[in-house]
Image (cartoon, rainbow, N blue to C red; front, top):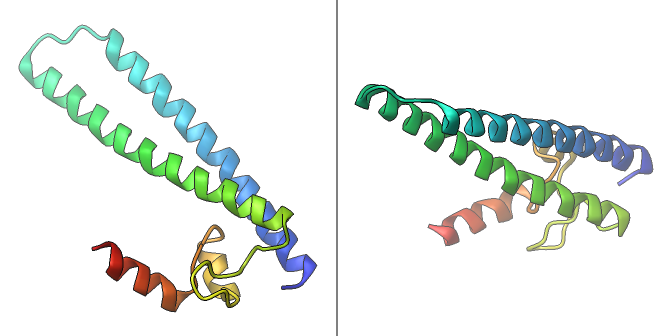
Amino acid sequence: MRNTEVEYFKELLETRKIQIKSNISSVEAEMEELKGLELNDEGDYASASNDNLVENAIGNQQELELLEIDQSLSKIKNKEYGICEMCEELIGTHRLKVKPHAKYCIECREIAEKQSK
């Protein structure tokens, strides 16, 4: 992979990292607000509880993505970025444009997904 491509993906990853950290902070602030609300009836409680579950699930997913982004940035630093963790072949540029923190090439991703089921 050329240096210009690596720099492009590094910028994408760093931008996404900032965005995720902002999202996580917003979710945490909203969850704190929910804790302070006086809920008047079961409907209010159910709605707040549902919102809390959804926001928690989204937050967990974003925490996972943040971890994967940090791993990708580390790979860039170590000049290992863009290499499939399973077959050690290059991950296609098109795949990295869709998911810059991808660990696997398309073929190995399908294998990994089948194994995790």
